[in-house]
Image 1: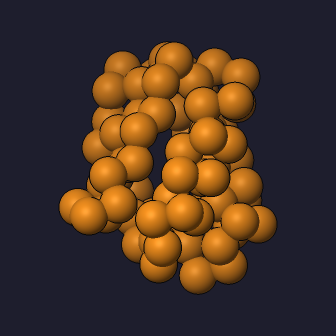
Image 2: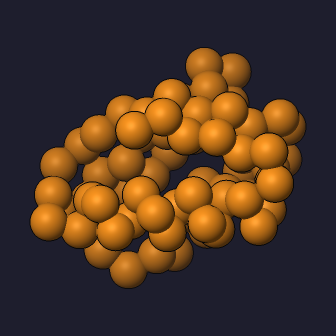
Image 3: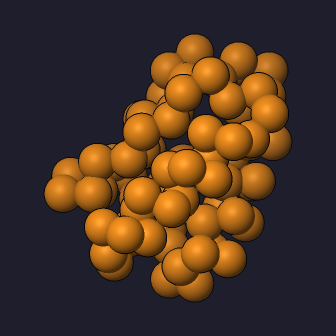
Length: 71
């Protein structure tokens, strides 16, 4: 299942690090962040989506404490 999320990330370097961290998570088929559009596109099984969203927020805030993600 592919879902799109609005995100708030302050720098392109942090966005790239967050994208890499998400793609390394189990059950993530693919994730891409468009820094200019402030969008995250996540491809993952629907049954894991809720758990992954929590894990993504936690991992992203370790990289950039001001990270926000609308669900």
